[in-house]
Image 1 (cartoon, rainbow, N blue to C red):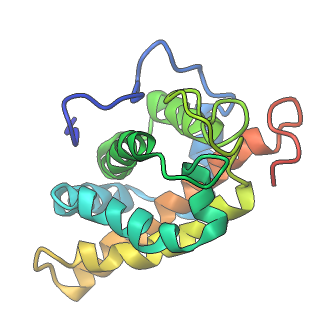
Image 2 (image 1 turned 30 degrees about the vertical axis):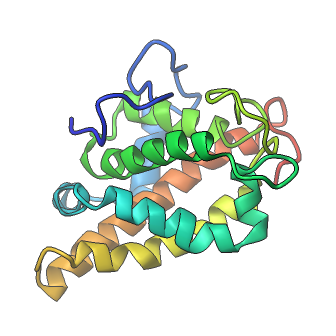
Length: 203
């Protein structure tokens, strides 16, 4: 599996440190059906991963510095309580964000992938936010902001998918697969947010 860097702080995909997801593999298969995620989408995502592999840094900088940084209700989640930048936190989380792009495209959607999706979600709730990097920032990222920002990521990824000279039809197929995957992932991420024993009232 390709990685964006040899050492990615806090990236422990597929290790015993990650708890088994409370969502079953059967649940995942049913969600795939609900979102219309097919074998062809898996193949298109693999092609997308090859296209995006050398662009992950540029993409994340676009999302973080070009968009999120100008939106106060989003940028505050990677800043101190006083609104000061946390450059070390940003650098570490950016690498994980870059790796998430590759994981979205190139990883098999199996138990390890499902487990790490739940870990990603928990790291945005008060259960685990800030703990991996030992920083002081907002206590959680509201679910509403995550759901809303999916639209931005879906819209802005398309030019990067077109950067390697594929036909418009090929780009559209990769883009549809990407959008389905993000819809699938956000459905999984909502689980901890809707579990009152974990992240109550963090909408």
